[in-house]
Structure formats: structure tokens, C-alpha cells
Image 1 (cartoon, rainbow, N blue to C red):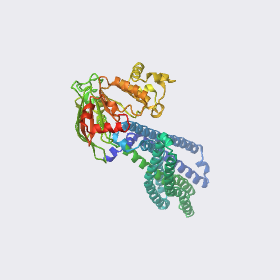
Image 2: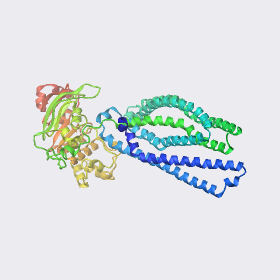
Image 3: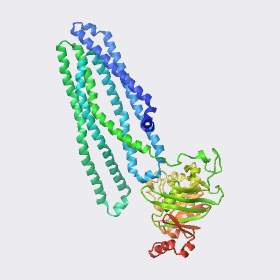
Image 4: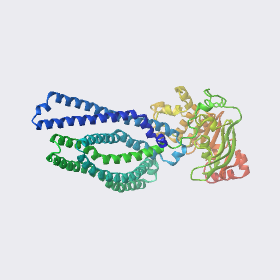
Length: 600
């Protein structure tokens, strides 16, 4: 029962049970109409053979058949519509729940699962499950209802004939079930192989510039060919087993009919069965044999759908982001002094004036499968201060940002933002205090104006343009044929890195958050673009707490305090002059960049 309550599809099924119940009822009525009509017809045949044909084929009989046909059509139509609506509602409700779930999944889930695999589940597996609810499940239910009702009516007429049939069909189902279980085991491997192919295709598309620049076409081609070869070999094995249910379908189509026809004819000759009843048996057997012949293939599709449902359920059962559903419920709308339901202004000039913007106290954190990245990190960043983090690769600079943004939760210690822990804020509200300008800017495939307006809900065109002027990107946008209505394209690839950086800065201007996180925004740009970005960063830094991850040390020369990460801790801290004078880790990093010809 607990599993039923937990399973997402079980809960969706239960919420739409009235549609399924209506479909079952209408299928029952449809079958009863079929049985009643054929009984009337078999009775008319017996009357004709007795020389009383006019009694069996009068106007009342014809009218009765027409009425039954109309009633049967209405029931069949209703059953079909119920199945269709049931499937559509199940699919729509699942997509809605998935759309709400995906953005709140733990950040760690996306670190461990590539985008192609996630999308394959949402698209391919959802399609399989949708087909199951729209076609497979109604067909299975209809087959069971039809078979039970027809065999029950035949059992009342001659139970021996039904027994002959029941002895023939179970071995077919057992063989089909064996093949189905084998194929279901292979289906999981089938889906994994297709995940791999999608990943390779995704990588080839995203890495097309690198691939062409470095002549990687043979390697990319070989990866695709190897993956396709593995799929081809696997599909031969899978198709050999899949042929069993298909072959059984053809066997079931003729073998029971042949045996049953011989047996009914024998009973007629023996005087145990009338010709009309024999006709009824043969007609009804045809109605039973056809759906039962498809049952092995349907059961195979049920097993495949079950695996797809399992994969989707695993996705939906992934833990959500900690504190992700909080918002204003615990701390008002972001103002730490606000009570529940009060509004709070999270702009740079309206934060609690306790002097400390960000504080890490004895923070310990490590990624799954690796050791501790941060091992007792302590630091305080004062309001309006320019702070920076430097260190060798892998020392935890980006991890500090991820913890501050709540993408991961520290395993020990405390992270505070303006005197309150992230738990007290609630993740959604805490993030309203933070604006990020990343080294790798992501733009949605929408207009430039839309991408910038992400920084502030409901902002007007004037606010957008003002932010772009401060970010030194307004003139460039106006030079485009469609101006602010220009589409950014997939991932914003129609713009240069420097242009995307300035669009990102404009977005941060609009957000007007009191804390600004900079992940080396001037890396990999030309001198003129670097100047424009620095001007924009200087403007947006005014009155804010600015925290920078530095790779080029020249970008943090004016930092009020530089934190040097080493061995999971803050090994050194101070101004650049102090750290160079100490001739420690920072000094060695500085000298290495200078001697290597890398801009500091």
C-alpha cells in the first residue's frame, strides 16, 4: 500500500479512475450486446432449419438487431473516448508534475546525469507510457472482459467445448510470458544503449566547433559507428525473442479455431448441439481468438511500458533541492525582519546593517565518491567589501559559490547570508539576494529583451535599456536588425562570449541584488571587450558585496581581501600587497603566472 501511494503513476491512475471505470463498464456493455445479438441470430438459424424461418426473421427481429447494433456502436465509441481521455489526462498530468519536479531536483542529480539521458527519459519513455495507457491497457482490459463474458456464456451452453479451448490456450500464454520476461530484461539494456547514442549525438552537436577545429571527425564518426554496431548486435538478439509472441499470434489465430471447429461439428453430428448453437460458438470463438492472439504481444508491450514507468518513477522520486519549496512561508519575502506574509525589499541598499554579508563557519563539504573539498572553511565578508577566492584547480573555489547559492548543502558547519542561515532564509528567498555573472553565460532561445528581463519580473522596456546602457551592450543591441527583439538562438551561440557576458551583467543590474558573484567574467575575451566588461562590472559593484573567483590575478588587484584556498581550508587571506609580501601560496601563484607569460 505504501508503494502504491509512492508510485507517481499509481496516484495518477487513481485520480483518473472514474474514466477507466467508465471505459470498463462500456466495454462490458459492448460485449453483452455482442453476446445477445449472436444468441438471437443462432436462435433464428435454428428456427429456419426447423422450417419456421418467418418467425425468426420478422420485422421485430430486424428492428431488435438494428437497436442492438446502435447500442453497441454507442458503447464502443464511449469506451474508446474514455480510453483516449484517460491517456491524455495521464500524460498531461505527468508532464505537468515532471515540469514542476525537474527544476527542483538536487543539483547533484544533474552532475551525475547528462542532459541527453534526462531528455530521453522525458521524451522517449513518456511516449512509451502514453502509448501504454492509450492503446495497450485498454486493449488488455477489453480482451479480458470480452473473453470472460463470452466464455461464461458458452460455458452455460456446453462446458466441455470451453474446456477444450482452455486446455489449448494456457501453454501459449506461458510460452509468451517466458519470452516477455526475457525481452523485458533486454529492454533495459535497449534503453541504456539508446541513452548512449543520444549522449554521443548531443556531444557531437555541442562540440562541433572543437571537433572540426581539431580534426576529430574520424573519432566522432567512430563513436557513432561503434554505438550503432552495439545496438545492431543487440537488436538481432532482441528481435529473435520478440518473434516468439508474433509467431504465437498466428498460431492462436488458426489452431484453436481449427480444433474448436472440429469439436463443435462432432457435437452437432452426435446430436448434442444444434446448428444455430454451433454457429454461435464459432462466431463467438472468432471474437475471443483474435484478441487473445494479440495478447502475447500486448503483454510484451506491458513489460516494456513497466520498465519505462520505472525509469520515469526513478526520476520523479529523486530528492528535491533542500529547502526548495520554502519561499516566503518562513521568512516573509526575504527581509529577515519581516513576518509571515510581509513584503521585503531585497535590493542592495535594503539589507540588515549588521556589517556582515556572507559568513562561512567551520564549513565541511565533499562531493559523493570523493574526499572533502572544504574541510573547516571559515571566513567573513563585510557588507560592500570586494572579496576574491584563488587557489589551484580543485581547491574548492567554485564549491564556495555552489554552497552560497544553495546548489549543495554543507555537511558540517554554517553558511550565513546577512546574519541568517540559508535554512532560515529558504533557498528561493536567499537566492534573491544574489546575482551571478558566470564565466559560461547561458542565454535562453528567446529574445534579448526576454533574457535580460529574467533579472526582474515585470520590468519595463525603459528599465531593460537602462540596464543595458550600464552594461555597455545597448549600442550593440540597437545595431542588430531586430534590436531587442533579436532571438538569442540556442544557448545564445549567435553572440560572442563578451557580448553574452555584458547581457548577463545587464540581467544582474536589473536584479539589483546586494551580493554579486563573479566567476572570472573577463576570461577569454579581447582587450577592448575586457575594458567594456570591466567598466560594467565596476558600475554594478557600487554599493554591493562583490565576491570573485579569480583565475587571472590581475583582475583582483583592487580586492579588499583575497582568500587563498589550499588543502580544503583558507590558507592565506589579506590584500594583494600583504599576500605578496608574505611570499606564500599566493606569491607562488602570482610568480608562476608572470613567468609563464599569462596575464596576472
